[in-house]
Image (cartoon, rainbow, N blue to C red; front, side):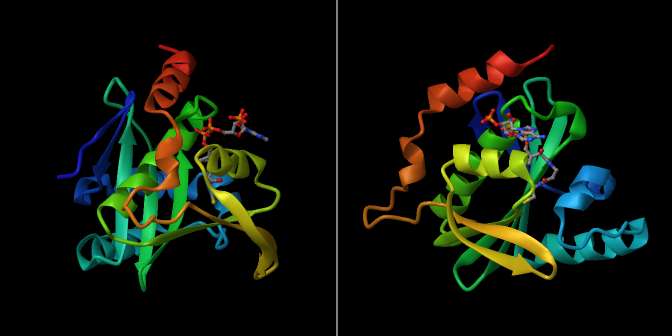
Length: 187
Ligand SMILES: CC(C)(COP(=O)(O)OP(=O)(O)OC[C@H]1O[C@@H](n2cnc3c(N)ncnc32)[C@H](O)[C@@H]1OP(=O)(O)O)[C@@H](O)C(=O)NCCC(=O)NCCS
């Protein structure tokens, strides 16, 4: 199992027991607002989708845990043709502590270093300022403004794999990630 220590955040791959937790995060009001499909997903529908994705390799879902072992959010990568599209949700009770930034940066580094994709894209609604801030702090850059359905959206891209196999994202110091999270810990 993939379990790197990320400052005070650990990412682990999701398993079948995470289904209900993911469903609750997905249906939380601000997470639905951020999504391009903002309807409430019934549990049975979510469960069918989640179980089918767990085994098929097209989707990788990582659960983020804090220093106390509490699950604080998830990150998902949908893989296709050497590209990954990223989406994230941090539990509403754990936001604005720097977790989103750390989870995005380290999940993205993992996808690239595991050679699961060569390119990572995010699509963020232009009004979702917290998400834009977290992606940009994590090293993503805006590449174009477009529409997804009716939603005006920024496409952002993570620095791509260089010839030597290192990504620009690693320029971000791990110490900074750790201290940012530690400073924001409430407990
Ligand atoms: C987007 C999200 C993952 C950010 O997680 P987080 O742990 O709160 O992120 P961070 O604490 O690392 O950073 C959030 C940044 O947004 C800023 N922010 C927080 N709330 C904000 C708001 N309402 N308006 C503007 N900026 C806001 C924070 O100040 C911080 O920026 P800073 O580091 O420059 O100060 C979280 O808000 C979330 O899960 N939202 C719902 C789902 C979602 O929007 N997913 C993204 C879809 S693409």
